[in-house]
Length: 172
Image 1 (cartoon, rainbow, N blue to C red):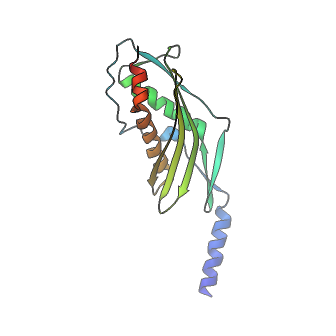
Image 2 (image 1 turned 45 degrees about the vertical axis):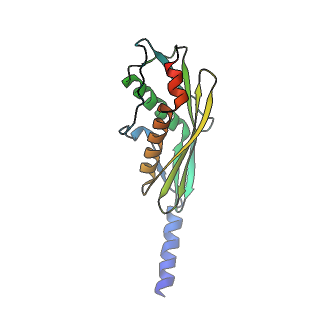
Image 3 (image 1 turned 180 degrees about the horizontal axis):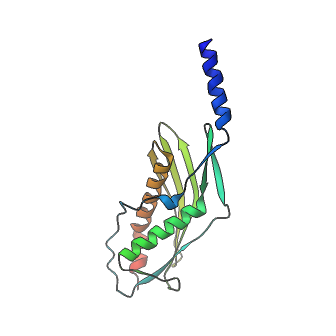
C-alpha cells in the first residue's frame, strides 16, 4: 500500500510540474576566469565584433518534469559582448565601421542530463577574411545554469585563443 501511495504521489508531482519552466538568462553570467591571449597590436588597431542572430526566438528544452527555456540570440549577444569587452581590455578599439569584422553566432544551446547536467553550446565564428569556423563547447555541473555559464566562458576562451582569430586581429 505504501509503495502504491508513493507512486501516486510521484505521478501527481510529475503531472503538476509538467508545466513548470525555468529560464536561462545568459545576461546574468559572470565573466571571471577568461584567459586572454597575448595580443601585441598597434595602438590604432580596431575591429568590429558583430552578433549574427538565428531565426528562432526562445525555445523550451523538455527535461524530466519541467521545461528549460533558452534563447540562442541572447546567448549570441552575451558572447559577442564578452568578446568585445575582452578585446577592449587589450586596448583594441571596437569600431562597427572597421574593415576587420568578426561575426559570432550561437546556433544551438542544449542540455543533456546525465549524472550531472551537461550544457552544450554550438557556435560559429566568421572572420572578415572569409574564414568560417564551427565550434562546440560543453560544461557539466549539478546546476544547469552553472553548466551553461561555464560553457559560455569556454566559448569566449576558445574564440579569443583561436590561432586564426589571433592572427586575423594582428594582420595589418
